[in-house]
Image (tube, rainbow, N blue to C red):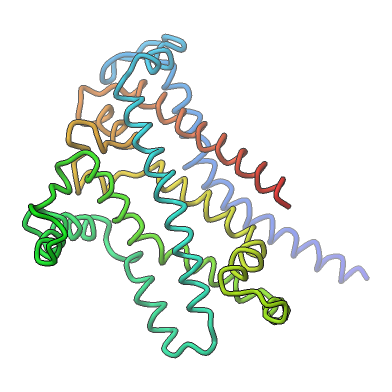
Length: 294
């Protein structure tokens, strides 16, 4: 008995040791910088000349039109892109989960491939595709769908649409993997029962598959929201945030405040804290809605 107790204690010590190492890194590189950003947000000034000013930076946000516009742009991308991307990811996962489908491995690899493509590379690729003399315009002109080339990256509405298409192309395969793993854990007898009851493909998808995938839908929606609220590379490389501030995101605005303009670190930290608070609030709402749907 004493040997077993000593062995259990040793296992517990080993477990706590491994957890403590990871916890120290999380503390140093996550929690401490977050706390420092909170303190920094209470200071104003340019460059290193910072003075404590209370909530002046947060009050400044209410009168900052650029802040509201970039926040609106970011939320617009999230509201439009995330549901479409999630729906595509679920449908593709369902199709690729069919055991009768041949070459499933090849299809999965091809759809996941955009996820491992460099952010800069694929942004430049889409900029070339959607250029005035790009392939998309040439195809549309050849098919007589349009009379003249569309300024995809120069028109405010078309530029937003181009960014959304780029995001869907890149991240659909990534979230498809999560849904695919969830589908493989669903008992096949559930689908057999639905088939006996006469459910068609769409009814099976929305009334059988999606309810079974609810935990994964919640997880992936939080991850997708977090990615979108930190959207930076695609916008910078495709449109530079233009025309004007039409496609500019909150992350790009924080970057500009810190590095492109005369550095205003306190105000940039304050906006970062607001983004963090926004993510937390939306997560709580999603959790509440998801709990009410159970």
